[in-house]
Image: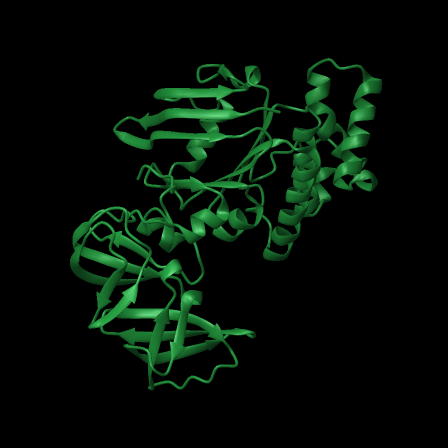
Length: 365
């Protein structure tokens, strides 16, 4: 398998820019997620790596070799599509073996490799069945088998679970991650589902409007968002944003919201003007003596936890608290925040202010 390096990758379709100056590295053996909303440029990026689209500018390195202008068949990359793309007139065995037959591999070797892949995927019992009558999960396993049997340097997967229902999606996500762990294959996976990305990925690139907003491990993306977009896109419910205006000097470790003072991570840079105080719902505590007050608008019971919707002087927000904590609609409660969980953003740019906790945040948005 191989490392993939993306340098200043750009793709334009006429006057429309689909990908804008993207740069990141996918390490050998990583399960790498390209995450973002529809139209953000993630699939176009994947197709450029695979050779299905040629970049307008920039470089793509696979195992140290520059491949941006090479044809797909010259890249030794396998592609798994969302809609399976199986040959309907062939049975499962012939679908999986087709790439090897095209390469002219001896029949005995083909039988051996197909049997090995079928064993890995748990589909030995359906090898001689037509693909048309298979369930969505089994068809996706066949599509994966056809990619795996080639033993390529890297796998490209474009929302491969998108056509499955919720139950199959969860099951296949677990199987796909377990398969990756056994094979150690470099895998680039496109999804718009943040839960899927957090569950499966070693690293995540978050894209928006053709730009890489941030990339890093899932926990870093969640705990230290580089932009308002990342903080809002990742998390359910997403991060709360409370607007305020003021001047913060480098080294500041407190902010004032509606007369209440709160500790925040020590700032590495100053800021002035309209700012956003960001806190995730699970990092808010409801207390009797909190200096920052809010009215309870609604509660949503979720079993072990509940989501409480609150209205404060700086705007509405949601808190995720234990379902055992009594809360009444209409009452006024105090709010408490842990300094280490706070993010501060410039309202105009959406950029996170650098602090002692997010000094290493990666992003060019």
